[in-house]
Image (cartoon, rainbow, N blue to C red; front, side, top):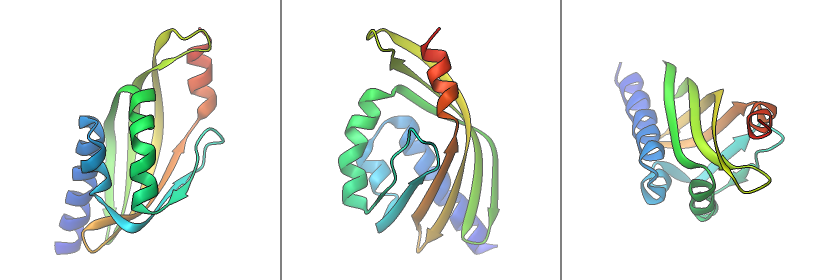
Length: 133
């Protein structure tokens, strides 16, 4: 029971930091050797808390008003799966900010109270279609 509570609390703290747009708080939720893995062709994977923190400023600025709304949060030991709806505003090719919403799935592995690995599944084509409208 304790590991499930810890894993859930770590994931919920991470999602709250993302929704607050607080790059330092987000980075504080991950391990030094954090693996941020993207499966979308539009995403870029990386390793390490420092590299992740360096990228967060630009990510949060580009994806304005970023919000993750959780559909499901399933925990199994040190692992969690989160179905989400991500919404934000993003500039289209002409520079016009447009609202975007996309569904996706996070997979997490938690180690010693921090996120060690995050795998993100979402469809970049859905984002491009919304920007083209």
